[in-house]
Every structure is written in C-alpha cells, then in structure tokens.
Length: 359
Image (tube, rainbow, N blue to C red):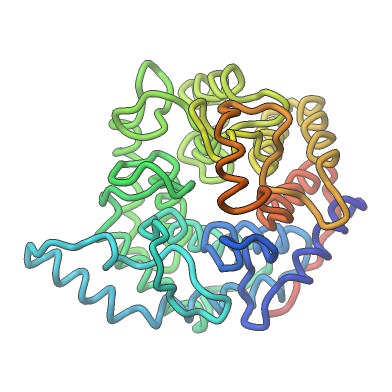
C-alpha cells in the first residue's frame, strides 16, 4: 500500500467509534454523526485495504441498528397497504448517533440511498473477507432493509446530498438496485426486485441518450458516476453511461469535480470524493494517465488533518460561500468519505496484495 493510502487508512481507523460506526466529520458541527452512505464507503475502503475486522465491526453495528427498527418497518408497510398517508418523518432515518440512536432534529432525513448502499457494502465485505454465506449477525438487519426497500423503493425522497425532496433520483435508484443485487444470493426471493429497478432506471431516467439527475430534470450530477462504478446498472462502455460521463466532464470537471451545475452549497466548490470517483471511473476505462492526474489533484488537497469535503478554488455560485460560512463555519474537514475515496482510487491505481481478515 502506498503512503497516501496508508495515511488514509490510519485516519479512518483512528476515527472509528467503539460501536463500529464512523462519523462523517469529527470536527464539523453538522457532521459528527454516522450516515449509512458515508460509513459504507469508509468500510469499503477499509475492506479493500485488508482491514476486514474494522469493516466487520461497522456492518455488525449497522445491521443491529436497522434490525432494531423492524417494528417501525412493520408499521410503515401496514400503513402503506391500508392506504394511510405516511409523512416523511415516519420513514427510517438516513443518519444516526455513533451509538445507534435516531436523531430528533429537522435534518432532511428521508433518503433511501444509504439503505441500498449498506447492503451493497455488506456484499462487498463478504466477498473481500472470504466469508461463506451470510453470517447471523448480518442476516436480520439485511432482511429488514430488503423488506423496507421492496415496499418503498419508488417513494420520492431527498437525494444523496440532502436536497431536492420528493423526486426519483437516479443515483438513489442505482444504490437500491446494487444493494438488492448484492443480497440476492442470500435472499433469492428479492432477485426479481433488482431487475424491476433496473428496468425502471432504463425506462424513466434517460433523456436524450444520457442519464438525468432525477426524473424530469435532464441535467447531470456527478453522483451519476455511481450507476456504472461501482453499482453496475450500466457497464462503463455502455453508450448511455458514456454520454453521461462526457456531459459530466464538460459541465462539472473544473479544478476537481463539482456536484451539479447549479450547486450553491458553500459556493458550489469541487468535491474531493467526486474527483477521486471520476479517477476510479477512468481507471476502469483504462484511462490511466487521466486517473493519475486526478489522484495527484486529490493528494494536493491533503493537510495534516486529512482531506476536506470540498475546495473553493473554483466556485460555481460564489455569492453563496459567505452565507454558508457564516452559518456553519468553514467547509467540513476532514471528511472521512473523501479519505475513503482517495484510498479506493489509490488501490485501483496501485493495487497491493491483501490478506483477508477474520470475522
């Protein structure tokens, strides 16, 4: 493992809570909590680095947290079948305290992507750790999640950036698809659900030959990279993904990768994790020199604490930087998800032998 990846792994391990959870950012006022999305990619980076025991601690934690929500899932499914109205506050939360409690605040909590992503990550963990079958500590949480997603995968929700509520978001649908597919070998009854979601994506989210940020909004978002790498709705050579990638490059690749063209969060800076993600895509396409260039850019954003969420060298909406800074302080740093995606890119470009850890 090269030095950049080694430093990153050490930082992730240092911030893992005793429960097994990971905070999104230990120093930013809004992010000291565990998002299923961020934490799953952190665990994936650790799995790819041979740290299977730490990843297993996370998956045992999240499985237990979700299993404890089984009663809430049962009530939601009953309410839907009886035609009752369900408010967004009744759905499962997207983030938890580091000890697993639900948070009572006004955060836009109803997001489905993390529930698909943790199932996808669990599938990756089982493969990378050489685990046979689905061990009991994970089974109940996985089954509760699958029941929830089967009932509500078509429910409009917030996107992965906690924005644009009441929409069908392509990267969210891809995340759910990947989670269902990852668990299908252990829960075969859900295999048709994966194909149903894939068909929905193919028939509802493509406009003029490329993917849309969400249905009815034909602009690109860098999270659309996920549809191919790693979630596999499309192959990296698929014409739809290629057209989407080309549009992302034209609109969003400006001194790093931006989220989407009208982003105003902290002025719409370039996101470290998305820049690493594009590098990951380039590596899978055999565009190694471009991937290396993005890896160098990511490394250049590092300071003694790690990698930030975003940089402000090029802003899409400069007037908004001051208001966000006044509200919450400087942009989040270190962001552990950024660190995780750097590790993934470094592993992709400089693979090292890995010993599967024990459970």
